[in-house]
Length: 424
Figure 1 (cartoon, rainbow, N blue to C red):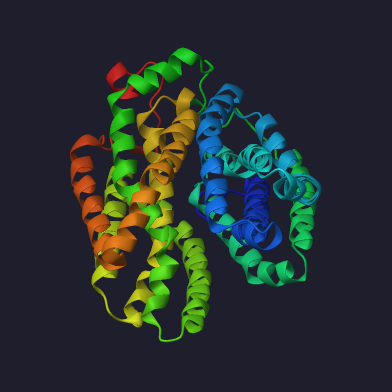
Figure 2 (figure 1 turned 135 degrees about the vertical axis):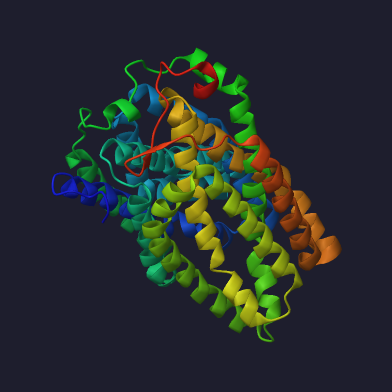
């Protein structure tokens, strides 16, 4: 792997194993949450929708808090220990707390579940990704070459989690808890050296304070970034929510459509794994801003073509492109944040400006999109969403900040003494 030296190879394997196991446990258990809610707690579709809506609300609240804590802790692993510790409680929580509460007192169960799932997963995954990004930059690695193992972990678990679920969902949760215990030992063994040659570019001697968050919220660069997320990333992720329903309409037999969609999900995960090897070098070459704009162009084109196509072969080719979009978006987001925002607020920026904004999109856009699906159909809705993505890509080409410089293939981070207009 590029940038992986003999000195940091062991730590690369450890942080990659940590990310692999985290996504493995998520896919093996939480990835089947909707099915579990319907089959094991007998909740209606409306109530299940409420569960995910409440989960989203708590996640939006917790993500900025996690980001602030991460920036406050620097490279200390205390928050990650907490997240992994919570995930290790998965089996007892689901079996002895969550399911009984949903059956006996549904509203209480929904709230308690939202708190737990946000602590361990919905906000936890953002904290793990943000820490992995900072760790990679500190050690001269590429985040994409670490994050790709998460895609592999998800794919591996997806290959058998449904079979395990059919035997008993408890097996999925027990597997998640046991894997989390192993993950805890891996995290404990991970060495953190804050005196590397990249330390001055990644870490700040001054810890984040509330005034830094206030300054971030007043920054025009922050809102320009959020505008991009609202126009491009919202369309990308909201369109994917019910894409499976549209996809199966291209097949005479819905069961065949379901099977092909599952196979393409595996292809997509494989594409993500491969793309994470390549995308970092590509984004380093073109710059983070251009990486974000290319995502917008690909998303817009994919959605418009999805709305216009009438072939199951073409729609099957388009589906795995979502994996490419995810890789390019995530790598570009981290590099853009590292380049244009004060290093004291990197994690806060990621969890607030990107992750929390995505969940706001779930709350704001999901229902109107569903209404359009019913009123005018998937085809016209996807064309509209694709046009919106292209429009906001054009706007963002004017509002997002341009790449300034590169050093050694890794985008540099503005330092504390840089002019205010650069640090904001």
